[in-house]
Image 1: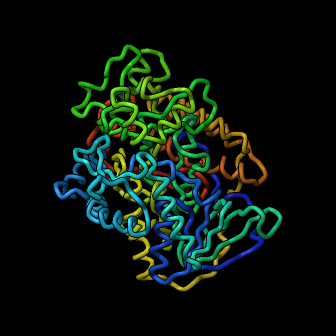
Image 2: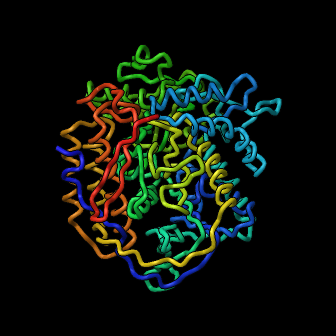
Image 3: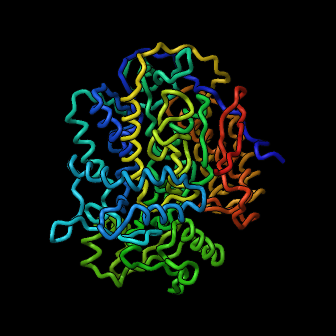
Length: 548
């Protein structure tokens, strides 16, 4: 059976009212995390006017939840080549070496630039940056802030810098809908919904000479995720509807250690940072046995896909819903100083890591794939750029190395701004694209999509489980609705879930964070990338591009 069989047809644009208001800027940036705000600040250095559109409030995205830190070669004894080696090992043969080279060589300058913008990282008594280690790294190269509150500090510094610039317009509570195109096909703006703006239902348009997607991830397609509720794959879905290529979407990283609380009901699980294992915490089963020892040379500090699979094997064997992280030997004083966020979170749920084991299990964490871009952040649509988790730059391959995510946002946001500054065309008028069908799914399917994807396309996948997911997604797509925010989000989730299932069915191997129990090993013929798109009739299309 074709891997595209049984998949639903998808909308080429979202059903929505005609824009009731319009504004014009040089560049519109969609998203306000590390990638979006960094891009905005660098675009301003190019002398451009920038509008930043963000879904809820400026601080509500994934950046502030990042605990561990930012990877970068800041130790004189470390090298970019060593960082590249660790990155490519984690990526299991699918990293783009040129993209990795860009990341590791330009990363240190971007981190120092972030410090100049006001970010305050933890330092040793002599004033040097305090560096730690996380899974997959063979050197101490992770800078962190507030012990385990790096993302919050990065977001604070960037937020303050953006607020100081009067030529960066910030539009909050705005859900991006679709891409606007000029007669030559170039991106020339977006449609969006802003609460309380313009017409009664708030739909408007921002016209721009370039569009930068920095919308973050799509973890909300799963029932358990470390992502916030706003991570509904909006940027990837927009790009697919516009005809752009997305790639590597089957490689969704499940963080090995999300905090499992008794009787949990929230979709977003608290993250237990990998840095805790980097400082010496151990994973143990219900009998206190360190089960990762012997599975990998780095044991608990193996790449995340290896650790997540190790935990999943224990869960399958025991029928339990969690294993444990043992940090008791690190001591209360050290834990409170180094990991104040984790301590507050776990103690708030009745677990004290200084004296008790922490219950943990894998949860959807990071999308290694996304909108396909080149080394300058350009998508396959002229004028449309992407950076951060929404993009697939080729850096992560089949599995992201810990703490490379914030670094990727910093590095490629700068590259995008430089590229836009070199060649920015005049503003073009949008044309009405005859894209059909246009519809939205019923908002009520959101929880069903999450259950379907967790059951059929989660940590462990097979031909049967993925076929079941495809059929269920097709059934859910039959439930239509009138346009509203919840329905638009549900449609975006349905869209990215469909693309993921299509690629997961096609990739008949186990590689990185794509684990097929019916194809348990990696295969040379699958050393390449699956490119997904939506055809004119709304059906998924797919091509395979071998690695050079």
